[in-house]
Image 1 (cartoon, one colour):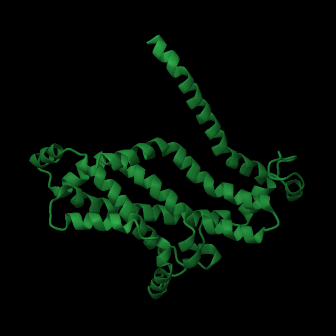
Image 2: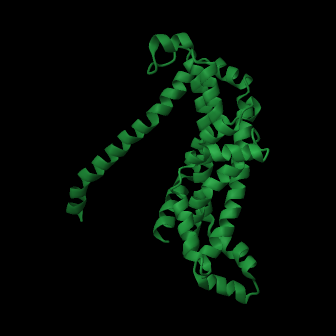
Image 3: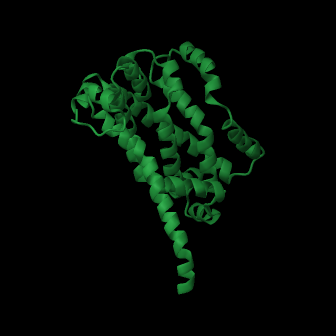
Length: 279
């Protein structure tokens, strides 16, 4: 056993060293972004991106806040939360019969959801723009919510179907013996046992909707309706001569998703693997 451990020691050392270097490479952009956001424009222009701030300019963040960054934050939060709730509800309702019931259209519908994941969302920008204007939802938050839900349903249903297939049928039979109908089994057995899958798709879809830019750019016109990705684009134009202010907006935009991913990254990775393999 000792000889085996001695032989494996160089492998462990190299693996740890590689992980350490990879962590540094991954964190370096965030470090540089945060440090540069505290610089003044003359300091940034004179010393460059990689230098340490000579003086921490907290006034950069004060200026960005006064310019209404929280309006963009509120819009992104409303769109993401409402779209995510609707998406999870519709996906659960679709995944349950596809995973547990046998009917003639089961396989075609499953194939339809899988094939839908291959459709690039950007090719639908013009039709969705015209449809949104026709329905009177242009430049309104609901005009973003509906496309976000529609384009995230295929991957969400696919993951939830694979999770539900791992739930033993005996649990449903026991619940039905106790007097539960199909709705009761779905609400009291299936949904609670699909918790890890729900966390997985919730994090994945929330990050996707929070960072989405193309639909927000096409469907939102007024400043008060723009989301955070548009705020980054807008501030880049407004402060094209002040890179630190742009980096302030970038940092405040990515911070919520960094926190969310840091909290749920283990469940996200385990859930994606379990959903892909066990199904």
